[in-house]
Picture 1 (tube, helix red, strand yellow):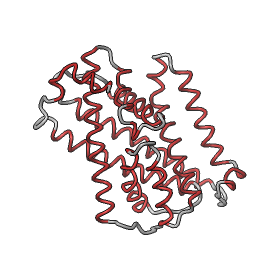
Picture 2: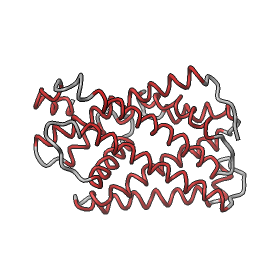
Picture 3: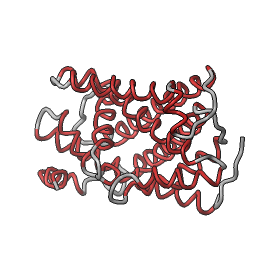
Picture 4: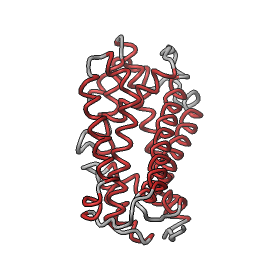
Length: 277
């Protein structure tokens, strides 16, 4: 409701240039989101390998394509549940799939938090943000290194140095996720009548902070509304606020299109992903 109210502050934003100016940015941003889902699939496969199990990258990507659209259901958890349930088809134990999914969530929040800390420090939120990031890193280390907790989760494989390397590579794939979202922002911001005049670093911070806001608000389906409204934190004028919310809304539309395409692709071409090591 807040986002809609702010957008009608200037109703020309709702109709200006939709047929022509926003067509190719929409196509490009949708492609970026398909790559986001691909990167999430690669990252999850690496997290599974970090826990000493095996899953093929293609199979994991298709699994990501299948489940991402479920995040729009109330609760914002069904895409995680679906991944754990469907992972059984790949021969992965539920405990390992669940642990990899939790590690993915923690890694995404850590990456977003670390990237956005520079902005949060300037706004007076740096200490709480630092506490969250450090705490998340501590939890991730405990999961990876604590033998007793690993056994309780049903993870019996011994932890080797190569497993930690897989986890590191998985975290790097999540950094790529935020670069892609920054690219989506730039595509839509580039066709605004009034340029936002933001540096790439600032855009990267904005994308990270707003993504984290939508992710950590429990129950918001896919972070809808929360992520968009969080862009107001970066606004320095009413006009800039409208432009930011407008860009964020188009990013949401393109991400929905991307999730739909990914889901359709997984159903049509790979109805049952096979285990591939």
